[in-house]
Image (cartoon, rainbow, N blue to C red; front, side, top):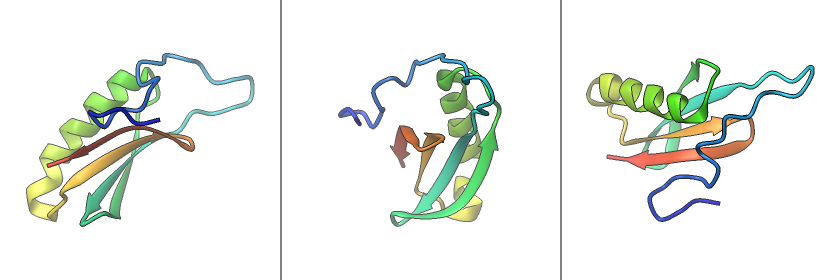
Length: 83
């Protein structure tokens, strides 16, 4: 569930993968509501992944005309931000 700030509940979750399960956290960059780029983020706490995604967004946003990004942990949206 997304709160009014664009964060999914549980964004501070520091859970570990279950046995045999790999956690893959991705940052999807958006332009006009469509995914136009993706980066695989380092595994670790979700809060760190969100910070990493925000830094990547600001490094690439102007040159690639991104207007937002979403951070996904597997099939769970954990953060959304728009310029």
